[in-house]
Length: 193
Image (spheres, rainbow, N blue to C red):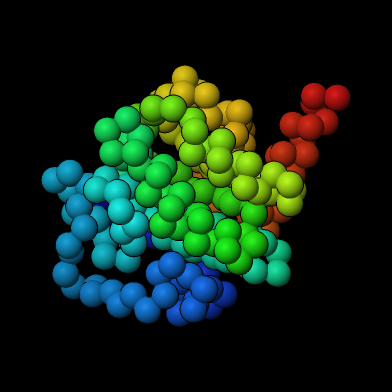
């Protein structure tokens, strides 16, 4: 896992450690010292901790005018034992909500497991953004992670359809990726009518 880096192609558009409104503003990274781990596996030093011992994040892109954030995650998402959604909500999402961010795209390629508990924090998060036309979308869920999230009932609060799979997402510019995801949402809406 130590060689899995967060998306770095968008650094000319956004760098969380340089954004005064980011919860990660001012962070300094040591490219040669691996300190963060998911269990016994070291992860790349560019990943940011936010309170969880098994899940790490990277805020890849924020557009304050468009009210959107793209966040990449790595590790094990464990709400059952360590309440990771609480840490994510309090230490990243609530911070971004202060700046009227209400569209969230979480890239989940590297979330290896999910252990659900209840959906209260997901419901709260959705309620925080729904009046502004916001959404929460999980992109590229592994099948067993998707199944566990369904069992927990997250589909009532999060866009997580099986066709939200864009394996080549790193080749897109941030706004094009968002357009692609929103097109998938649009297709779902058309199918329901």
